Length: 295
Image (cartoon, rainbow, N blue to C red):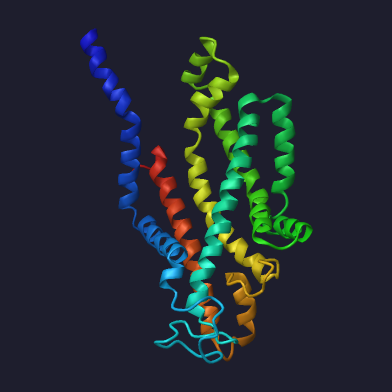
C-alpha cells in the first residue's frame, strides 16, 4: 500500500502541470493562434517601444502637409505635417493602457459579483443576475457613451466606461461556471467535512472556474480596442485633441480620403491587426483549454 501511494501521489501532483503543458502544445500547433500571437507581439512592441522606435515626437510638425509615404515618413504625414507612423506607435500606447486597465477592472468587478452570485446563490444571486441582465441589455458602446458623457472626457473615464460595459459578461460567465461546480465530487466532499462556504469557494471552486475567464478576457480586449477607437471617433476620446489616439486620428483623416487615403489605411490597419491578434489568440486558447476540442 505504501508503494502504491508513493506511485500515485506524484502522478496526481503532476496532473495540473501536465494539463497546462498539453494545452500549450496544442496552442503551438494552431497556426491561426500563432498568427494572433505575432499580431499581439507587434502591438505590444509598438506600444512599449514607441519612444525608442518613433522617429519623431507625436506632435512634431516634421514634414510637409499630407505627404505620402517616403523614407523620411514611412506612413506619410497628416494635415499639420506630423509623422503618421510616430503617431500610430504612440496611439498603440493609449489603446494598450486603456484596454488592459479596462479589462482588468472589468475582471475584478465581474468576478467579485459573479463569485458572490454563483457561490452563495439564493436571493443575492437573483438580485445580482437581474442587475446583470439590465446591463447586458444595453449595447456596450452606448453604455460607454453615456458614462463618458456623464463623467467627462479623459483616459480614466474611458477605462471606467469600458470596464462597466464588460463586467457583466465576466460576472455571468463565472456564475455559470460556479453553478456547474457546486455538485462536483470534490466540492461535495469539502462540504461534507465541514468546510465553510467561503473556504470552499476560494480554495476549491474559483481556481477551477478561471480558465473560461482567461479566454474571455483575451476576446474582450480585442473588442475593447475597437470600442476605444469608436469612442475617439465619436469625439469622446482624450480631452486633448492633439493626443495621438487612433479613433481621434481617424476623425481628422476622414476629410482627406480622396487626397490622402494612406492616413486612414495605416491607422485603420493598426486597429484591425491588433483586434484580429487578440481574437485569434482567444479562439486558440479556447480550443487548447477545452478537453472536448483536443486534436
